Amino acid sequence: MLTLPLMVGLGLTVLVTSFLSGLFGMAGGMVLMGLLLVLLPVPSAMLLHGVTQFASNGWRAWLWRRHVSWPIILRFAAGGSAAGALFALVGAVPDRAVSLLILGLSPFLALAVPARWALDARKPLHGVVGGFLCMGVQLVAGISGPLLDTLFVRTTMSRQSVVATKATIQSVGHAVKIVYFAPLVAASPGESLGAPVLVLSVVMALVGTNLSRRVLDRMSDAQFRLWSRYMVMGTASIYLGQSLLMLAAQ
Image 1 (cartoon, rainbow, N blue to C red):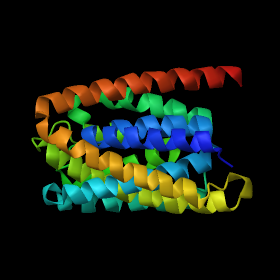
Image 2: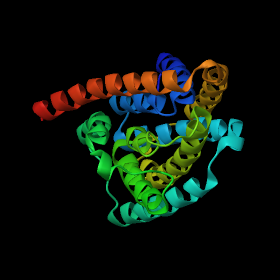
Image 3: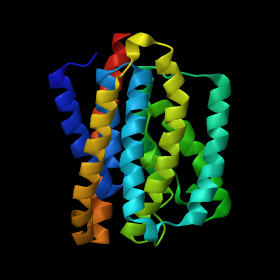
């Protein structure tokens, strides 16, 4: 059971990270996932992150709905559904250290992909493969933003279209994550989160998303791409260090 100070801290964390997600399309969710993995058991962390980010991304997708590229969404949904079905058959539950390791490594691995192998979200087959890979990473590490970003970094889409389309894709991914981890949490009574925690997280996610909209409007495309990379790489380095310490202590 979460204490009142911890709930207040969690609410403020969700507010700040939802603001970052609304601004950069991914950094906030990565920060939140790392913190939740430290505070909660893995299934509970995955579930709470899924609920929070579904609210944040869903509301962001609605705010920017006229900029969403729906053909890309459908291709990602097809690939993601296949990955979700595969994980459901296996019934895998990731280890905390492994989740943090993948969380920390994913941005660096995404950048290491040679240009000739890089996926492009606008290409039909690439969209399906990207959806499968992103969903797989999300069910193991909790987030797939850095990998998802590589599918958009070479496009000529505007920052509004990138944020709106990624938010819609991530909404679908987090919905699948909720469906996958909710039964695991329900089967372990000691891991129950409680309605107040879920409601507080959703409210703070919506407030943070709304606050980010005006800032994104004033930011240039160049600033958007530069600062989002700094945010993700800095956060990934911290999580990579945490995971290595955990693995060394085992």
